[in-house]
Each structure stands twice: as structure tokens, then as C-alpha cells.
Length: 213
Image 1 (cartoon, one colour):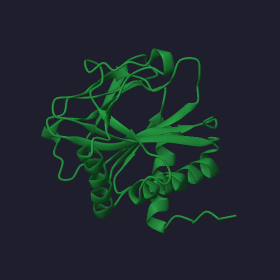
Image 2 (spheres, rainbow, N blue to C red; image 1 turned 90 degrees about the horizontal axis):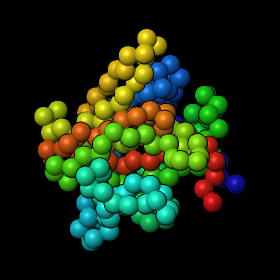
Image 3 (tube, rainbow, N blue to C red; image 1 turned 180 degrees about the vertical axis):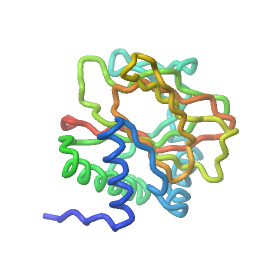
């Protein structure tokens, strides 16, 4: 049996910050989850998939309810599966390290994960929604890893989270999609992707509390 490789000290500090944010606020966003060189490698993988026609228009709903509606969601995606590419395997291994840390410190009971690479072309967005699926609570934590080099706020494309407060007033939190940054939040939290003025790349997915069949 292969033993898990413990994260480096710097990586463990990032994991700790994520765990603290999730425990205290249900939301965490942290810079440096991937180094600039790692961001470039992962971004180049997305661009390669795009150049060979391997990105597909994302949709909403599951199975018989699935449909593509660019008026709601404009990203193009490719699911990340083990063994497809060196970049994809590296990405999944980093997420698995995060899962091991969260399970050991926060006792979240994460059993599986599913992720895709995503490209938002200029002018696209994803309207307000939650990642919770109908008839199942399998999606526990939503995770977005940003792969945008030299991003500035005026490029748009922010992740906007809608956070209910104890006084009943809703608070919004906007997160710039800066390269190397990771955003994690409980999947029932409603959110949207604001219109982007530049091509916007990410690796996005969910930590699940049950195994994928």
C-alpha cells in the first residue's frame, strides 16, 4: 500500500488556513495553493485541451435534467480523470493532500471528489446558483483553483458568494480569480461568476461525502 506523502510545511499552513476558514465562516480563500510555475503548467493543460477541441460546453442539471444554457452558464469544461495527463494527475494529488488534511482536522468525512478544468470565454458568466444537487447532499465542499496569470480586478470574472448573516441580512463576498488562489466553501452556499472581460481559467469541483459509483 502506498502511504500518503505528508504536505510540506508551507503547504500545511495553507491547508490550515483553509480548514480554519471553513470551520469559522464556511468560506476560505487562500493564495499560493499553486506556485506560479504550477499555475502555468495547469493553465497550459487547459489551453491544450481547448486547442484540440476537448473542452465542451458546460450545462446545468444531471442526467435526464441536463441541458446547456449559455444564458445561465457560459463555461467550457473537461473532467479531470486520473491517468489522462501529468498535469491532471499532479492537480488531483494536491487536492487529495487537502482532503486528507481536512478529514484529519475537521472530520468532514470526505470520501471522493470530482473536478474539471474550465474556461470562461470573454463575456461569459454563471448566474447565481448553489452546487447542491437535487435529491442528494453528496457535494460537501466546493473548490475553485484559479489558473489566471497576471489577472487584474478590472478583468471581472469574480466569484461572488452570497452569505446569510445571523441578522437575516445577506452579505456578498467577491473573490478575484488570481492565479494560484484557491476558494473553498460549503456547497449549499449560493454564488455566481461575474461576467469576465478576459479568458478565465480554473480547475473546479467538489469534495463528496460519498463514493462516486
